[in-house]
Length: 170
Image (tube, rainbow, N blue to C red; front, side, top):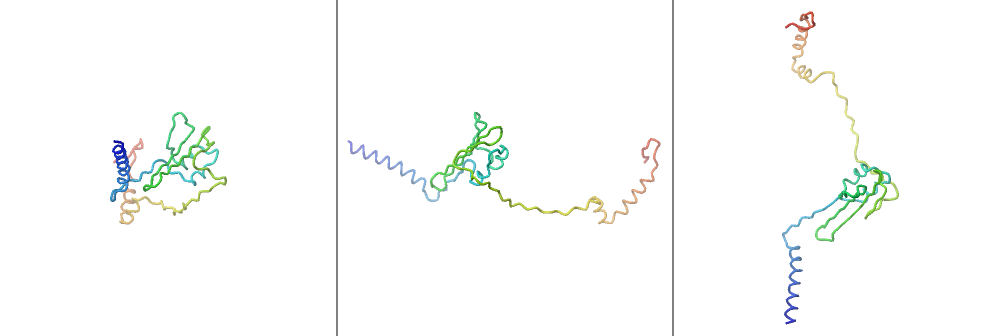
């Protein structure tokens, strides 16, 4: 009786563990790799300095993953990934504020002691000044040769008589 019970338990445990191994490694089956949370890098954390406002930290780190109702002065940034069946990667950073200024940092990353300047890849392009002497309509009519007609209609409108109450008579 003991041998049969032991063999049944061994068979069940091997079946359950092999099912997960087989299902995870089936050929032709694609499993989606889902990253969760905020991507946190050392360069992001290096830019954080004591006394920065919440708005400045929000620009550097993005919005926090967890918004704790009881601790409004604490922002938690979490990142979790499980790439291609390898070990799960988890990173966490907590930022602490007083009077809307950062006073502390806690987690997997530490800011460097030397200030880090972020190099900008942006460039400035000078745009030439536009010639706004003529309106678009004047330019179009000038190209079509209708500008003389416009001048003649304006000269006839200026010769119209005015009434005593400064209204035009048509």
